[in-house]
Amino acid sequence: MKKIDTPWTRAALVAAAAVAFSAAAQAALVNGSFETGDLSGWTAAGDASFIGVADGIGRADSHAAFFGPDPLGGISQTLQTAAGGLYQVEFWLALDDSATPSSFSWAWNGVQQGVVTNAAAFDFTRFTATVTATGGSSQLSFDFANPQSFFRIDDITVSAVPEPSAAMMALAGMLLLAAARRGGRQRPPAG
Image (cartoon, rainbow, N blue to C red; front, side, top):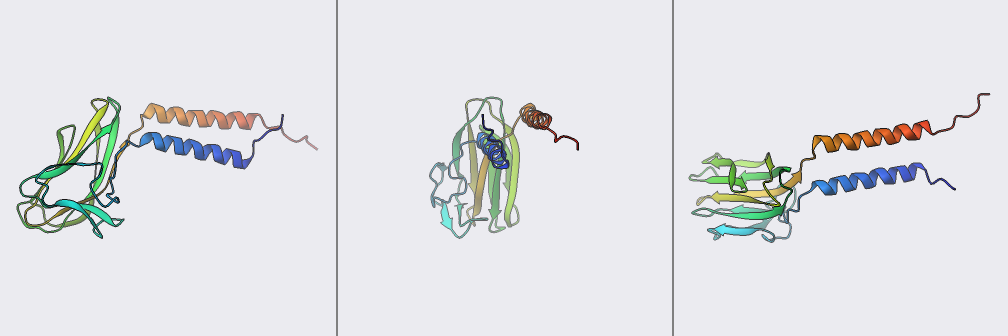
């Protein structure tokens, strides 16, 4: 039987494993960078009169969502999660003006995770936290109040945090594979 073990097949297997591992780590958040040009995938709540998406105000891409409601308004999205699973939530937030009153908060399954109140203006700043899913679905929500100016939010992601045991098992499997390959090589006769 002809062996198909070449550097190309090994590289293809490693690439396929990396793609499969990274695909499994992503939760199914829809439109986290708002590049659709609208709030599709999100549910608006409260005062939606000054909530939307605009071009040219994004962090690294063109679009971002903006919020300047009075009183409170915001967006939420329900994601499929694994009960007890850990997830990393990441987003970038900016405040265009220091005018008060202003307030921002975000929650995971109704539990407040972070608050910004009457802050000085700031450019896009990365916020990140690790949260736990309590069931097969979890809700991520953002609430804003800013009658004088606007908050902007962009590049929202939710990623499953791999369990240490799963990462160690994957590493152990790769090491065993490498050891088996190395042990199976024939050495040329000494000459």
